[in-house]
Image (tube, rainbow, N blue to C red):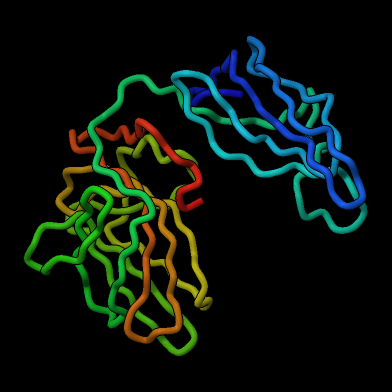
Length: 249
């Protein structure tokens, strides 16, 4: 267990479950605490899968974790317990929360947009995103277009920009590297997920959002699901006071 600076985190409580399947019995629930080097070893679990149910320590935030599966024959499709040992441990990154910024945020906010390829200005509010007039101030500019077998979402910015990221927490916006135009496309009508940092269209506010794109079957509109945070102080810190990591994951 490490923090965002790569330092080990001692005293994290790890709640886990060894679950059963039709052919195997499970060990049930267990609990262990990380040592001074941030390590913990689960030795008493058995079953078909190991589920890290909860990670907790005051002043820290943690990601949700998938299940780990026992080795079995056939193609390797999941993470196995045997993939990790003392010499090559599974690394969990936490986030140590110091000072909380003033943020504008929303979770699982749904926005319906036209798919006519024309620019639409979007303004975020608390738990709400709205399309406003082209002469009004917004946080991002987008347009969505559909063809017979494909679609494209284009994000634009006048004095800001966007960048994709694999960062789970989305807590620390980069100070550079933003593109004024970012295109996302596909052929599937089902949802597509992207994590992005952005600098608002007026160049004043840093933010981030998790985005589910749902092109759908309609030729006239599509739906976007956002979970977003925007720093209202002009800084790059996006640490939320309380975060539900199941939102849009």
